[in-house]
Image (cartoon, rainbow, N blue to C red; front, side, top):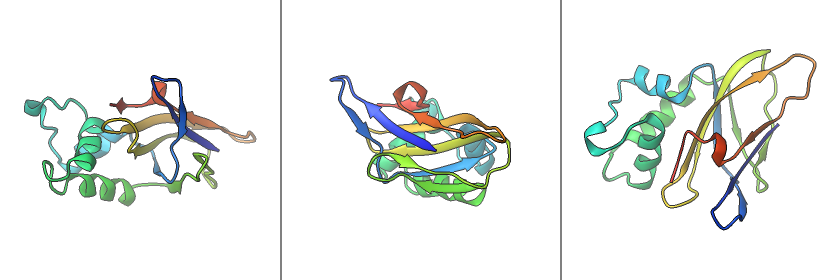
Length: 139
């Protein structure tokens, strides 16, 4: 079970609803590096997470980048899930092991990106909470 939400500075918690997440073995930085996308550090962007969020928000500044990243995630994922109106989603049929959940939400000024490692343990109900504390990048 995945529970995704964002608590803003005014302490309001908003669910990350209708957000697509990918479950992969690699983290976002590794996936982006494998695609050959260059992070434009000369523009002040430091991570793949920031590049993805900014390319979604300002696609005209980064033409095709958001789609390229999303396609790379879709091509190598074990599972793709979408949160409901409460920010909840279920992942099933994953073998025990370590995975990364990767997704982005248009919350805040620019957005929030998660690329978080998690473990699936056999014989347990596994729950993953995603919030700003566990975000790879948020603004």
